[in-house]
Figure 1 (cartoon, helix red, strand yellow):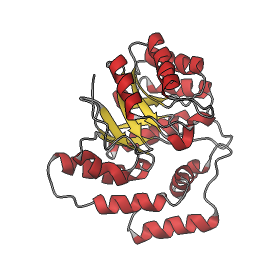
Figure 2: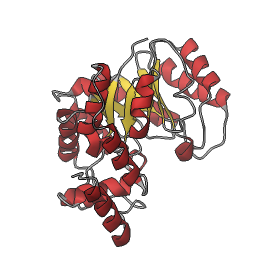
Figure 3: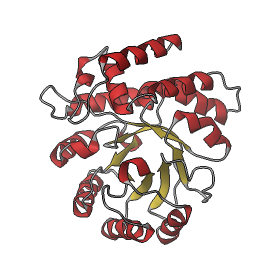
Figure 4: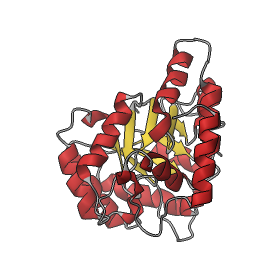
Length: 287
């Protein structure tokens, strides 16, 4: 089992005015995140509007990304309910040299641990060389991973199931697996997570907190005093008042209109919430 550590942004997708995916600008955004502190970026996670973007557009981006200088720093989200489409997208990704994936169980339907284990088993049987980070986010998919389920998956597939992104926060404190990556889904859990053995974070707001998050991570690794963790947490709390995707696109859209495009039913913040978001961030001297 191979462990990965660090600060990972759940990358945003940049759209054209006609709401098609702007491949070049989406990649450029991800490159800037890496250049300003992220160890890597997850493409086509929930923050990247993955469930709303067509498979053909995802494939177009992967083809372009396959020649990128930061290629090894990307994790690929699938954002698909269909097992066959998930496998197909992963096979294409692997053929282009991408092997690490963030995969959430299907949304909408009701199921338990046995169904989840069967879902990942079918994927791994078809793509034995893949490396999978489980995505635990009950609010989005309706299913919450148990510690028992994660342990069963790792015992069954120690070479393929290499980590978990825990956005439900029922795993990261108590799950203990050697050489297994555990990523809470919020900057609020970064420092405490590192202190109890977690691997870093994968979060939406690292699209704007990459530099602060990386400093907290590096200062922890280098056993230095923490000087920016409090500010980092306060910034996250400001964004947590709103839908994160709406808040991030509204915030970044103030400087670059390309970020204002969202696929329905997603929307930017209303005028009142936008004003509060910006005012609260100004109070923290965050730009």
